[in-house]
Length: 313
Image 1: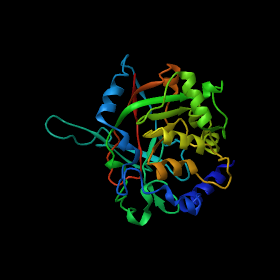
Image 2: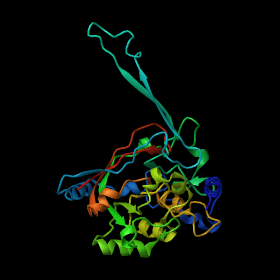
Image 3: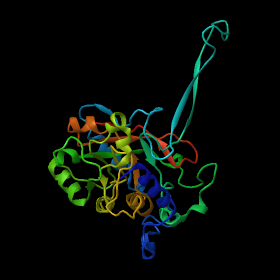
Image 4: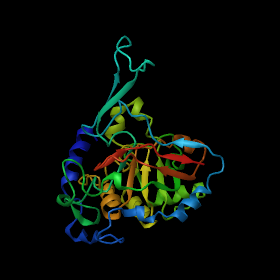
């Protein structure tokens, strides 16, 4: 699929439903009609204590990728950072101690690089998590509901599924679907169980293309299909991530559907999406389960957020 096709589908998908009218039964949420947190309700202090017991070596893993001006991104998204100096080294200093400084400012989309998709990101026919109509929360200055700044820290058990290893490939081909069958097989191969409240990361080997072949990276990708998303939802996971830019398989097996996995996870089940996760080192170390820690920046009203989660083994 050409990149323009993916972009075109996305525009349609953000504005039109890929679900039929009889699917309106997906709301209200099982956590109540007024809930705004979704699957984060699966987290608990007891779960944090259990996850902390997974730490045996003390090794930490940065799951975020570096984000810069050349980072490939969906559609028109871009990133720019500017360093601001107090002169060029020959200007005035501050105080008798001759202080000097550097500063910086950015202009960026928040859905770039490693990112958290909040529940206000993608919906079904203008309705988002819990059936909330966009008119009830969208404001030009930021979301009045579902802003990522309102989320508590996500600290829980994380698991990584080595799909590339399961299929005996260094990198899966673009368009490779990952469904319930593959998820079950990977978990069995690695000797792990996916539990309620977990964060599940999927390793496909796709991420290196972001720097070596950005065009190919964006044109397609291996990823979750609907059966995989529905299975993970039944398992009660909090978030699903992958080493790809959209987490779901592209092009979609149904050429008329636009990002249906996003709809299944975010809108229907309140499950957060973590895109562009760096899973390679975890897989190389066979760190199949770990303590997952994410405290996102609290930018008020944000739909998405650039993040750098940490895995600790």
